[in-house]
Length: 237
Image 1 (tube, rainbow, N blue to C red):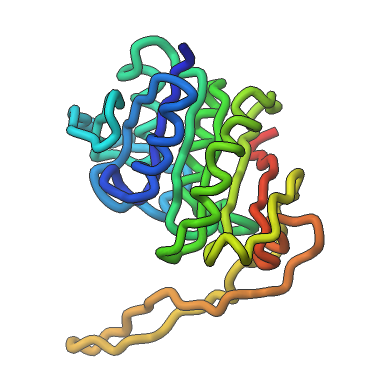
Image 2: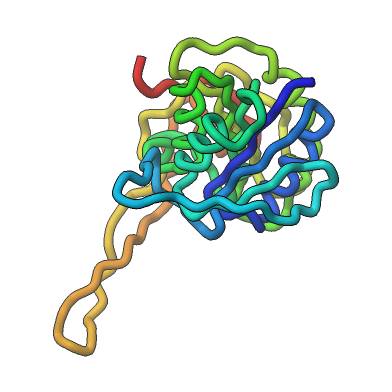
């Protein structure tokens, strides 16, 4: 039986990882090693200056071996692949992230960073993300279908599959677009909101407006047009 290691950046108690583990359980033996709390936007960072702790926890999906970890998502993949999973996993699934990971956001994403770490460890990896909303009809309809389609599809060195599900009702989704390129467009027009503090300093809070400009054939255009986006993303080639 194939072994599937699952992690995320929203934390081991998040709804997304529970739903992903439930779907993955139909494809193999599932191991979860995930952060003990929110670790979004940590990209591919790993812990070097102190030790990492991981401990077995209860998990709501029957038959899943689950561990919480106080490291980054990339740390979770590393210790999962190298230490925790009994025998090297065949696949790493990362997600389901609360919020898209497409275009330039992929560089900041710890969901993608964890998948890229799996690729560095020469393990087949898929990153899953969905719109940051509470309606998961599209994800729930297509998740198992896409796992079944991609789980045995080969990838090049240091490549991952990157999947994004639009939010909203299933009736609004137009289907799946495959072979989507990672958009070079900026997902948000970034800026920082200045906030005066009580001690006379200025604090800066990241702020931004979503940018709806994206080229045809890209991941960003697909999700803006209410398609599920599937494509290959590469890190170091």
